[in-house]
Length: 121
Image (cartoon, rainbow, N blue to C red):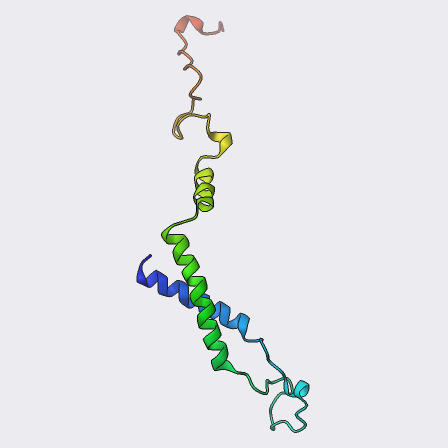
């Protein structure tokens, strides 16, 4: 895996995990019992969003997920290898001969017709 691809995968994983982690532990102003909200503030706005803590948790989770993706790309498990080999050569196509041929490998080629084999018109 190239460094650019690894960084791109990590960035995508980080943002997906960040949006999944954002709602953890959030309590709105109306849930927390704050009687006076700031003017212009929504009652559902979080009292303590803890964004830095969530960014740290996101970094750890995204790092573990990226490590799993990296190890799978670097050395795929046998199950993944077997899946893709089966997709390239499915069991119902194994007795069909080579991919470019139109004849099954077990059958003889049909000889060409001679001029005397033509039907009478």
